[in-house]
Image (cartoon, rainbow, N blue to C red; front, side, top):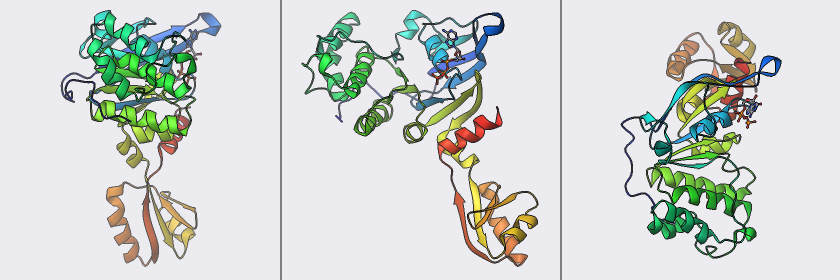
Length: 310
Ligand SMILES: Nc1ncnc2c1ncn2[C@@H]1O[C@H](COP(=O)(O)OP(=O)(O)OP(=O)(O)O)[C@@H](O)[C@H]1O
């Protein structure tokens, strides 16, 4: 991965959010086949973060991104881009890769970027962008010979060369091999944490999202069911585990908050309550051999949230 910055200066994380969805409704079809894809969804994407949009199949993620891109019109509600109503001019502040990118097979990577850069008067960005997306060596090869990962990176390059302030990516690691996933992760990380852009991405790969995203929103049935910093969501679902002499006795003592498993007892408490719990158990004569706070992964949080709301 190259070290070239394509943005002029890191953007502030203060000020209006990068993107706001306010009570967005979108339905498809009529009568018995009607589907409410988005059901009054409100969501704010702050500036300067990698923001992940998660949800089971049919949750409404693509519909939301297509509305943001101007490919669909919401039935009701509002979309704001950097504080202003989403107009074609406002959308020019976004770089989007939301459908599989299509390229002219016999044009090279450099030619694709040049055409776009010329149309937005940003020709000076072609070389830095080629470096940023790691396609300098392949810049003069026809795209027909590119791997999927190279095409994905060129797609991001096409979005970057128009000098956007935020990048929208639908399933950016879809179909990539492990090396391609690593490269994409590093690229997304650098775009935000070095160049100061905002990235909004949707993905089904929860371990990938956990690695790359700062915040996430979980959608289901067109509604927001969880939102927050990844670290906070993981903390909320954390559990305390104890190994004691008599697990069943402890479960009874905990009065519904404990569950025997893995040779010990899981206790559903806030992390801040752990010292008091240990003290009170010791006072009551429980012999604790091992105690640990277990953080779940994002997949556990996702499954617990989406099952609760089914
Ligand atoms: N053009 C359309 N015509 C009819 N129904 C649609 C259309 N686009 C989306 N839908 C329906 O709207 C709902 C939300 O779809 P959407 O594609 O936004 O979900 P998603 O979260 O992106 O799902 P996936 O993860 O499978 O891509 C689904 O029930 C889908 O079948």
